[in-house]
Amino acid sequence: MRATFKRICFISIYLVLEEFSRQVSSIDWPSGSPDTVHYTALDSYLAKYQNPREADAMSKVQAELDETKIILHNTMESLLERGEKLDDLVQKSEHLGNQSKAFYKTARKQNSCCEVM
Image 1 (cartoon, rainbow, N blue to C red):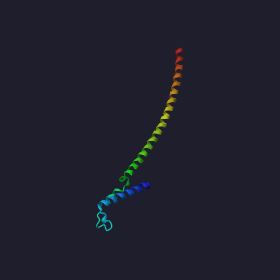
Image 2: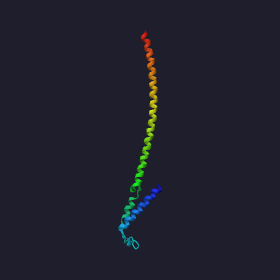
Image 3: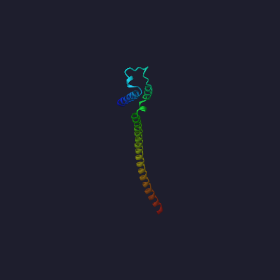
Image 4: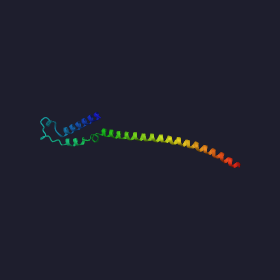
């Protein structure tokens, strides 16, 4: 996280310096003062970088990846729980199948006894 913060800081400083170099002549740098040098883009950069995730594309993508990872973990947990429930249902179904076979055999024996009479 600190590396990301440092990277964002360096990017913002680089962009401010590039913009400043385009707007203000290098001749005015040594003798310039706030009264003589008019650089208005600094306020917009400061406002933009108040939320680094919005200003930096990599941070934004990383945040989206983190969100996706959390959603994926939750989905996987739900699938595993459903898988366990499915296993329980399969076992109950097999047990019910065995019981119905036993009931069928018993009923058949009982019915064959009634036919003789």
